[in-house]
Image 1 (cartoon, rainbow, N blue to C red):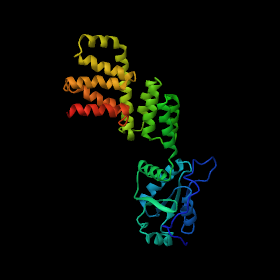
Image 2 (cartoon, rainbow, N blue to C red):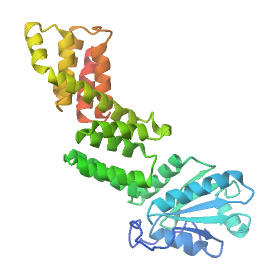
Image 3 (cartoon, rainbow, N blue to C red):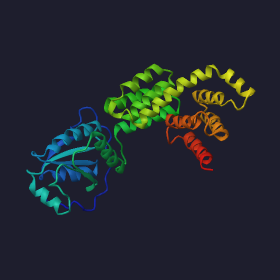
Image 4 (cartoon, helix red, strand yellow):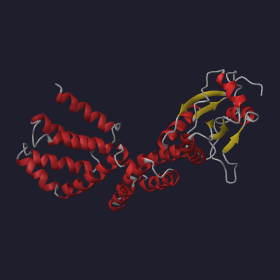
Length: 320
């Protein structure tokens, strides 16, 4: 074994590989000090390689390794996992120790890209953190997990008004990652856009309890609740407008009109009505207008342009 981990890498011929075709080799393998150069260092010039340093006596290793295998296999060939038993490969451990890699403290996972160590972590981690680590490694190499690609495509479909296509893409993500909050929340939002509120409710109920409080889930739930409230208000829109025409200070009517406008997709106008209430009477109905705006922000998404614009206006009212 004659190599230097920190050597200047040769230019790679390509970035991280795309999803493996049917019948492709298993991306999970055992490694030794004799195969490390080929299976890790050289292989990392074409795709990221994770090395799982473990030991038979290490209980956390037995928890972490199956999680690593699951996430790597779900990546569809875009990343490789090489498992190295530190007790059986002491020459490798000593060499890596010379460059400051604490291989004796297992479990240790090191990510190699372009012949060099890109990142590492120690100790057992939950699946969500392992997935995030691999996502960051792939991103550094110009790639992404298949689920991330599908979510991007689904969100693009939503932006283009193709809710049914988006629902199908979000569903594909859930086949790969059953606890992906963005997929559950996105599926519910797509079903809402399709008019299937019952389906959206079912999706939100079926989402695993471990992610029930995630912003993607609570945001979709808020969107569903506001859709239902807005539909009722929309049915009474003419009466609401008549009440406002007779009395512009009928804040209850203005509050209901905001719900109807939001249900119709007129977000900026819905925010205008609530901000009008706040400007006239910040304390009306126990701060109802501000609290409703916060619900809208949650439903629209915290980075949505309408959220950002309305939040800026609300801040100027509250802190002026």
